[in-house]
Length: 314
Image 1 (cartoon, rainbow, N blue to C red):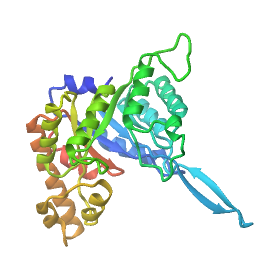
Image 2: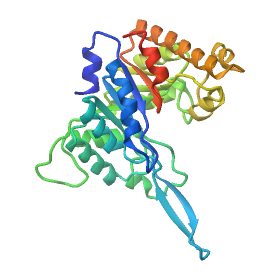
Image 3: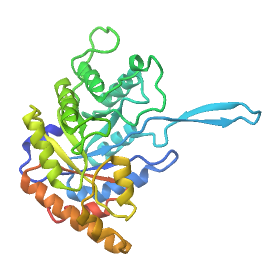
Image 4: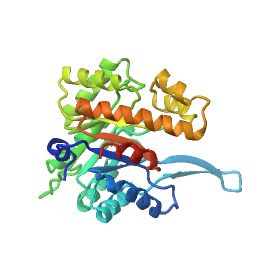
């Protein structure tokens, strides 16, 4: 079932979750245990993140440096299929531009289609340190390019001219940035970029995390004024550690309201967890009252705080 079908046909508040694959060599059992904690809350879908490969150099013992390339958290496609089959819940694997050639992307999309996975989040991914001169011909440079490739396959168009091709039927989500993407010159310019992704064929938007709902409301209003009519799902992160006060703004270029900062700064671990849950609960209530199509929790590897929040609305 497509994500947009859930969003358009539900008459109740929906809550979805985003988790990460285990580190290379880790066990899928930890992922299954996490999903088991979420299933009593009837998630319409669960996102699986992906990361591009990282390269490093290692001395081979003779003074020569050997380049190695590997992904720290492989397995997005396999885990997505395993969760869907084990728990009968839709999964949304993240498909990246960076670190993948167009051919590798096509292979991944073919595999996802064979596995019966109908939903994808198309993202650019972390910028590679060095792009080769011809990298833009080899890989999709922007999420909009990736959306185009997915839509081409939905229309039976592959990278090679093939006869009797099978049309895929992917529902495509993209990311949105209520406080603007850090590379954008302004929020208005960033929304123009988002509009282009929508024009290329995106079906829904999931926002970057935010802690002030007014930022989301402003973002939705600007999107609508610029002709973006597809569903915009707000992304929520529950603050649970004092170091989040610095780490989250540093890595995600967001603002944390002073009221939340003062309720966390200098407090004990238990007090911080309670403050984060209380803040998120109030956020969710306001977003549900506003009519947000779904609330998307960035939980990554722990469900405890999110399930405490969602239990107030089930």
